Length: 217
Image (cartoon, rainbow, N blue to C red; front, side, top):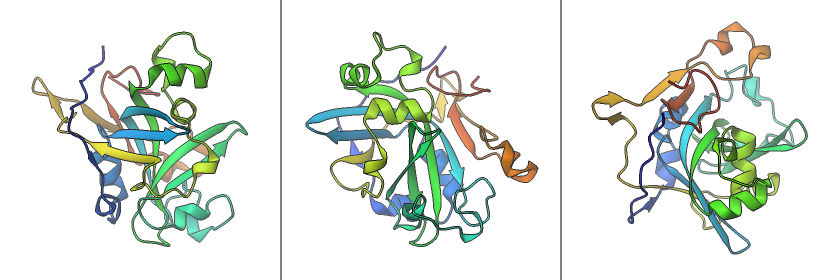
C-alpha cells in the first residue's frame, strides 16, 4: 500500500535559505514531500520526493568529498547552497543531488525516489516504458532518467527556472495519526566502512511504492 496525495494548486519554490543551512540531515528529511520540477526543451515534468539520503561532505566516508577530496567530478558539491550536483553512476545512471550548506562545504542530499506528478507521458517516452509502474521513478537512476536530469544539468541553480523544487501544503509526517516518514541506513555504501553504513541518514515514506529500498513499510 502507498499513499498518493493530490498536488495543490498553490505551490511555492524553495528559496536559497532552505538549502543554506548546516544540518544536511534535517534538510534531507524536510525534502520528503517536496516536488521536483524540470522544464527542459519545452517539456515539463515533476515528481514528489519520497526517498532521500544525506551526505555530510567532509567527515562522511560515504561522501564523494570525504576528507576534502575535490575533483572535476565532484566540483559542484563545493558550490553555493541550492546548486544541483549530478554525477554518473555505473557509466549510465545520472544521479541528482541537492547541494546544501555554505559554499566550499560540500554537503549534499541524494534524491532516491519520487512519486510522478505531472508529465507522466513524457517520463514514459524518456524511459522507454509502456506503462507507469513503480519502476518509472523508483531509484535514483530512474529519477534522473524520467525527469530528464543529466550530468549536463550539474551546476544549475535550483532557484532558477529549469530545475527547481517547490512545496505545497502537503505533509507526509502523519496520515490518519500514523507517522509516515521513517529513517534507516543508506543503500549501497558498504565500502565506506561500518561507521558510515550504520548512520540513519536515509529518509523515506512508509509504504510508498516508489521507495527504492528496504525497509519501506
